[in-house]
Length: 459
Image (cartoon, rainbow, N blue to C red; front, side, top):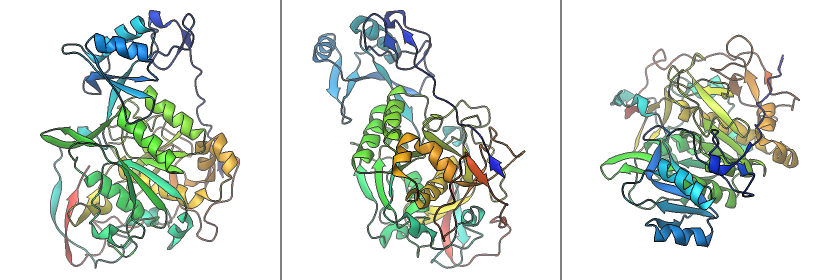
């Protein structure tokens, strides 16, 4: 049975007069001033979603930069080419300054948006840690690592990703962890933020799901791939190690990954809509790069989470458990494309630990792995036309729900291609539906494990 779910079409940009400050958000052209871009929103964004002391500009003219400096602004180039970071004088809020400066200088200025690798809505649920029995330290059984069975991942399928370059934008990771010790080559860290280090458990978990050594107790799905790690996150504050990043760091991470040849990019992070980041993703998508992102953990009534909600270019992934039931805290919406295992996922954790984590962040790597073993069988020229659509067309998918695309599961549960072909036969539709596979028992029902490690459960 075929699923013919069409992907949303991109909206055309609206022409406005910048000095009238149109009520729509996004880059626009001015009728009077030629190619002038306005990023000003009609209402203030939610407090805490942007840096109130900073603005960004692309290709800022020298004359405008000089005027800003004379007005008390600090102006300095970002590490991301063409971006300029502008620190505001004391007492001035970024949203107010943005609108004033756009009208005064006929130049677009953008807010510096904050991103996080997981939802703070769940911070009230403290981590659960303790000694948990496991069976040995080599490989991972189907009960503990049920995700492989749920997506029908065959042994040695990861070899099909050999030669594929996967970019990961996340926190840093614990390079000394046993899951990464015997990798050759190890993931290449191509970016680290200046200043202090943020907590790196999130990046350690995400990267181990993809790159963990096959003989470790947290084996990755595609350790044969080439990995580029863009650590774009920094501590929230001097006293708060929770990781966050912003527009400039995220744009820099995207550009560095493209420069180093990333073909697929995994983004287990969320934030509000951001025109500068979206522009960069659009440009890279047109060059054939496949983007995969976590749908967000804000709950059913949460607003769309970006970059996953850039529905033309990014494959948005939600999470299900071992019984193919949806994760209660996952975002919902028409932008959700596919589902993957993301509840009680066994991963590596810093400081020689391993344990279970939950969230759409950890569902995204399963889809990234399937994309990696599919990638080489796709036509490179066709990828440049619409990489998201072509990749979704190539996926095998089990429907979940009422047999049609829906706001909770999208098209359905992504499945791995057969090992014999490394990719399903191409179909001229959004997905192919196959018979459901056997669902393995939940970890709670599985046979007792042996030995001892420390388990930590994060949401």
